[in-house]
Image (cartoon, rainbow, N blue to C red):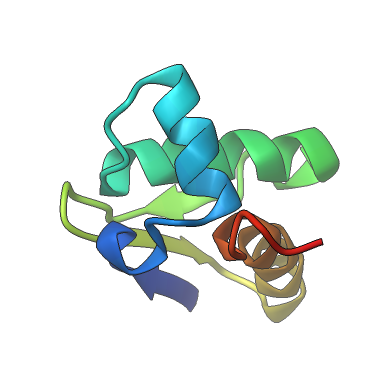
Length: 87
């Protein structure tokens, strides 16, 4: 399995955090998981059934079973965790 893990507080000023704030206002691990899953599936519908999570409030943990799936998920996550002011 291939895994991505981070603490939401470490990406508080990110694009994803702003998006979560505008939708629900609570940027915890579960909210991050939901926004990442939605964003990945929007871009890569074939990954819908491949996404797995062990997230909790303090930590976002997403995993998949193949390297190629992880690379595609990581591309989406990188866009979401970049600083909001970056272009």
